Image 1 (cartoon, helix red, strand yellow):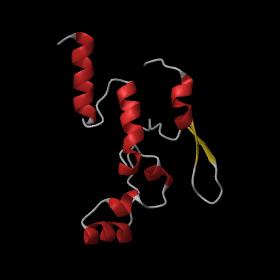
Image 2 (cartoon, one colour):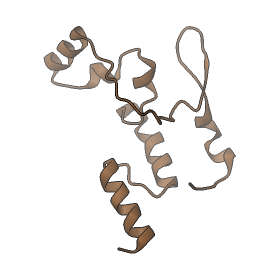
Image 3 (tube, one colour):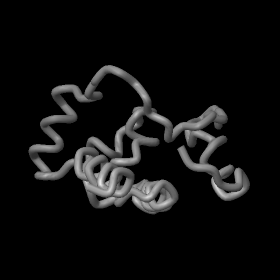
Image 4 (tube, helix red, strand yellow):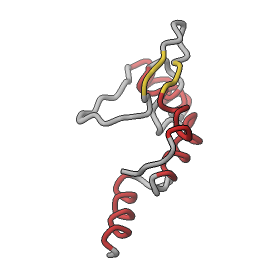
Amino acid sequence: YKETRISKFQKYLSVKYPDKNGKIIENPYRHDGASFVIQLDKSLLEKCIKTNSNKPYWNNDWFSTYFDLRNPANEKIKTELFKQFGLSPNLNYSDNLNKQQKLLFRI
């Protein structure tokens, strides 16, 4: 938990989804689910294999990948949000957790 001016991050709290309806999405970068689902079908998997890249996956029309902070298109947003909370955008979850615990408990 960390406080800051809402004006600094308001641009990420209400975002227009770039579909034909232009729907406003509230807090789209929030992901606090307790389950795991991969949005992948056979044709998309084949495109990824054929191009030897995850780019077809990240460029699909699924809402969940568009706002996913792991999507390379969101690298700038991820970096800004992670830095606000003292996290490294280059570390994985476990490494960031260990880093925070060391700072918190001075291990």
